[in-house]
Amino acid sequence: MIIVCPHCRKKHDIDEKRIPANVTMARCKGCGNRFPLQEAIEKPASPAPSAGGGQERRARIIGVTLSKGGVGKTTTAVNLATGLALAGFEVLLIDTDTQGQASFCLGVHPKAGLTELVTEELSAAEAVVKARERLDLLAGGKSLAGLKRIIDRKDFGGELTLAESIRPLEGRYDYIIVDTSPGWDPLTINVLFMVREVLVPVSLEVMSVQGLVEFLKSLASIQKYRKELELKYILPTFRDRRVKNADVILEKLHEVYGDMVCEAIRYNVRLSEAPALGQTIYEFAPGSNGAQDYRELVRKVADNPKLFR
Ligand SMILES: Nc1ncnc2c1ncn2[C@@H]1O[C@H](COP(=O)(O)OP(=O)(O)OP(=O)(O)O)[C@@H](O)[C@H]1O
Ligand SMILES: [Mg+2]
View (spheres, rainbow, N blue to C red):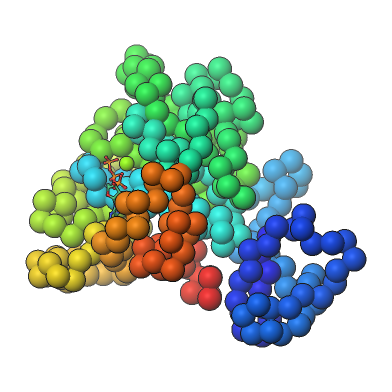
């Protein structure tokens, strides 16, 4: 759980099992202030009803997608999802890529995942695995190739296959973050019929911007049928101040897409080293530029500038 110091607003991520039952006061490690524990427990930003009873959450479903490969989709999906979970939200990360890299990045090796949920071989409770505190994962991987064939074979409604399968899960989470594969195939189209918001990572190079323009045309063709699908965030990635051209591209993105453009993620070697250890950037290098930049993205998506401060 997250405890927020009422004096300096510093957040402390505490394992509640380690707090003895008779403890009522806490001391902030940041400023030394003592305060009543119960009053400082952070409540989730959106209503936090139980899945079983009464009111339900309605997850914000965000697809991290661009047809071009290697622009930081998986890195962003994983570190956005884990960042939101660290901030106190209930999060589900869905990997729709046959490469199955989201699990790898989190250091978990589920035997089943999205395919088994869609084919109804497993129930949602069995297909979803816990990857971190407040973070669940529906894993991708090679088996998704079979899913593409199932979608292809449907006479009609194939594009709604994923949306229908995850509907029962929506009420359990504040956020569902979806990582996608590069390219444009039946699974990508399915993702765009499942998510309501789109976050597009664009590496700061000419080829990626070209990819963005092409992708937005394809997105528009889906938006004709799905008015609620919204291009919400454009996330510049691999920012390197030594590359002059990158700043020109960034300026152009701001000019064309305005407020949709998020603070750029800087090139940071720590981000590429963390997956080998199955760690998120907050675990591997919490003080790095990469961690700082992804915390900023979490603040933007959650629309809460106070998170992690
Ligand atoms: N800001 C960054 N700085 C340095 N390295 C990064 C950064 N973001 C991602 N990387 C590294 O770049 C590579 C590509 O990133 P990633 O896998 O996230 O891209 P992707 O868009 O998901 O690729 P694909 O299209 O193949 O799924 C990975 O090795 C990753 O660790
Ligand atoms: Mg990827």
